[in-house]
Amino acid sequence: MYQIVAHVKPKKDSKYYKNVLGAYVTCFINYKEIDGAVVLTKHYIENEGWEEIELEDEYFIINSIEDMVDCYKQYYKEVFEYGYSLIFNTYNKIEEDD
Image: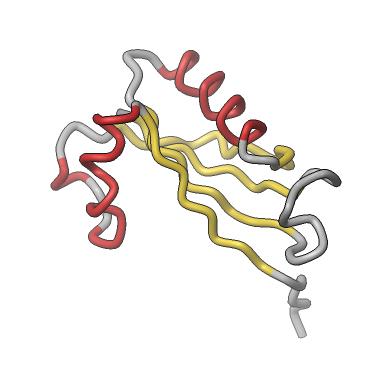
């Protein structure tokens, strides 16, 4: 399983378009190789009504539930049942550094 993080924004026809500016999405993809996992990640993000801004170059390989951060362990079974899990962390405004 791979953990891939992407920065996304809602599509204009998305139910989120008027409510949020964007999100960071953590994608868990149960696939044998990274290239296929990246293709699937992009597909699932688009299918949920989001556009990719940036896909992080770094990814993590998850071999067992112990490899997951505690707050994501609840999604472990879902990944194996459905093949993937997407966790969106949305934001409404961009905070500027002082």
